Image (cartoon, rainbow, N blue to C red):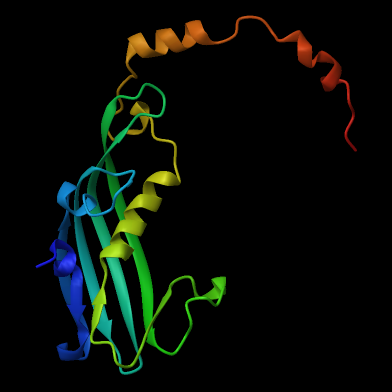
Length: 175
């Protein structure tokens, strides 16, 4: 059995209304996504699957930590994550090649489909939660200082004097 098969939902047999699914996302999950920015995590995903006659409403609540590096000193951090995302699933013959951003949070299924995999959605939500911010040591719930050896080395590498090659370009007035 494929390890991500646990993230497949057989919606045909589900009763109408809300059904809750609980998943744990860890390093085993991210191993199946080569080139992922996330390699280690401990995130609990609560998925509320609301089955309606003509559509499904999926509400994801994700809490936990993702292991990442400080963007300033490169120290390993367990960054806390708390996300709430919703996705609408519709039955339609919508083509994937239609470039319409108004349907960004809508997933289309064929009437003949019986399963929905939420693994890619979970991966995308968690990956995008990291890429939208610059994470540093002082942004943790219990802030800590960056590695002093690295910050000292960065201050030594910073240019001391202004680069005079740009002086003439700074005089240009842009209207």
